[in-house]
Length: 328
Ligand code: ACO
Image (cartoon, rainbow, N blue to C red; front, top):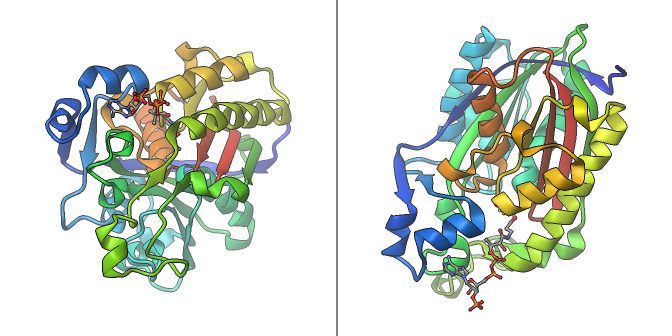
């Protein structure tokens, strides 16, 4: 095996807010049915942050679990990277708020805005800077999409949930890390999935709030076509660059926005559904939080073991995408 970048994942963790919203709850809020949501997306329920919970609160809890599993103290960390599109504040970054909570001032901390691909962007960049940092790096994916959801828009509000996942990367000489990693973007398609207001293009006013322009605006079926093609192509490219045949992949952990997108990606990448960890039914689309939560779930259930080859693939707003083959 030829390694693209060597690193070891010391530990993983995740956190989901306590409150659960089921499809049946949503039936009472908008014109939808449990049946429609389940057959079109695979989602049955999602977790919803409380009024007091922001992105950094979710990451802090996931980080505590990941540090415990890694067997290191927060003070051993050399950097914090958080993928999110629903930060606590426009600035400081969520990573800085996490650093404050973990009480480890001094080390670099920054966010990555790559929507659903945020965790794979974070892993790629984290593993690239690891030799320079020389100490473990905390990479988180988190989104609190329910805080930027229009609860009157059935086309989006049934899809999203909240959650955070964390992986801690460390330098290693062992045969572990990336066989391949790809990240990419196409900004020309950004308008298809956007939070229009609240930035410098359209600063917050009473009117933008009245018109719900601070919520997710999405052309779902157009995105669907791009997602199927782009996530599949990225997965195929990551497998090709890894130098191993698709049969050698032990587990595929895809971004989970829609069961039908996952099934199409599996077909394109020639990875069977039986080797794919699908968790969408119990959490919905948590954007950057989805992959690290599903990854942690598979690791903690023993479905991914040391030495296994894991394929990741994601697609999201921007558009952005990422795919990688990792030896765990
Ligand atoms: N309940 C009932 N009916 C609904 C609902 C709902 N919640 N939402 C839409 N419909 C209706 C539509 O109005 C439409 O009705 P019509 O035929 O009478 O016009 C019909 O269902 C079909 O609508 P479509 O939008 O064509 O449905 P589709 O099969 O494409 O499923 C979905 C919609 C689930 C949004 C799908 O397009 C999808 O998953 N898209 C990709 C989402 C994604 O991956 N986003 C990127 C990541 S998110 C991020 O980065 C933050």
